[in-house]
Length: 193
Image (cartoon, rainbow, N blue to C red; front, side, top):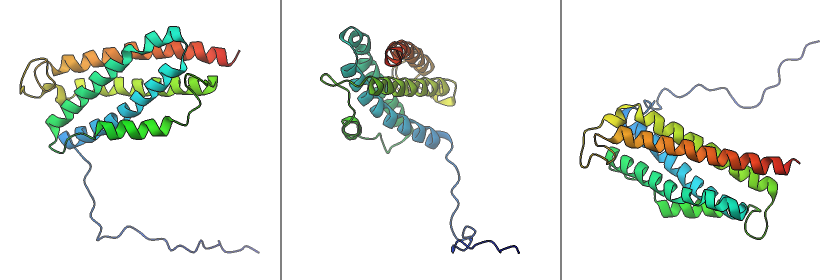
């Protein structure tokens, strides 16, 4: 004898017709949301970079330390672009860095203790964020964002040189990705010897 299906106790309901349906973001609103998400990712990336620098051997620190200034330049560029697109502004950098720094403070990597598997995970996570960042710069360079009318100098974001600025940042991310991939492979192969 077949049993009837057991009820979960929750009535099946369709969405209320009284609830407003929001249209998806488009144009400058969508780009602003996209840039805000990437700025949060940049704060995480900056914290990951600091942890990676502390976790790698002395000879490899010199390869990673120049990325700090590059990351800061990229964050400044994204914040300037966001400021041109929305009056709301950018998320607070200090708060973002503090919160991500606390999140990663529990990782067993640093000058005293360096778990090889945790170090590998840090390098892989940072490389993944750099790939996403490169993708963002390329996408923005191919979009209407690169064609915004000038409000200042030619090399300023939003001016006639915006496409070149964005493409330069994408190329910089490619170089960062290459360094991180080399380190990831080196430290990864050492873990699995």
